[in-house]
Length: 115
Length: 115
Image (tube, rainbow over all chains, first blue to last red; front, side, top):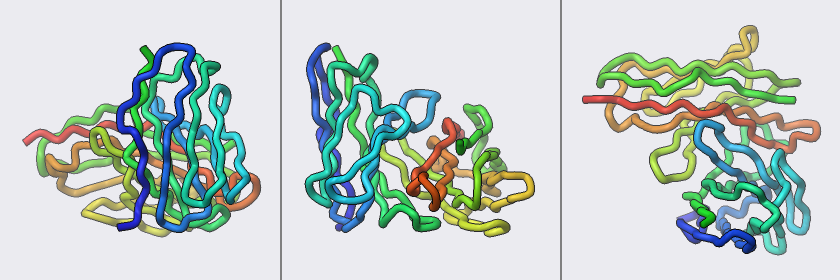
């Protein structure tokens, strides 16, 4: 079955450590996205990528980094510079940017807790 | 920039009651509009969408009509079930310009349906 997988489902990190969240898709989608979800604030875009080896900052990119070396993979690193990293992180993909009505498909999410 | 405003929640209803969740938006051009649903501990799933003015999206008994004159995309269901309990997100995507298909979400509305 096609879809998006995120791992791990739960992640605990000590303050000052970097941590990488995995996102893989087998939908053959060009575009991929990372969102952060906090209670009562909806989803906010961290980074997005339209194509391999290219990515752009979203609304809250500070303290995060990404790479897009393969079409199917878009890992997110939460660095020690992120002031308040505890949140639920969602990865998504779509057939492409610039396509009216293009649906974004979401993974199951990773809940990151900083101890 | 683009923005989406949803009615504040949480919303609590009895089974078989009528549901309305209001959503209004601000955007340039001709955005596509979406409703996503999130069940506890999961990612988002597309519920319905509309890509142009006066389009009606529908799925699983839910409906929403793209009203350009009032910049609204209210979600309705005639008779809710306990299984509809979830968080509902209204979203907007602009295909053109520099938005690159980025989804802008409202803050989400928590719906709880009691038997």
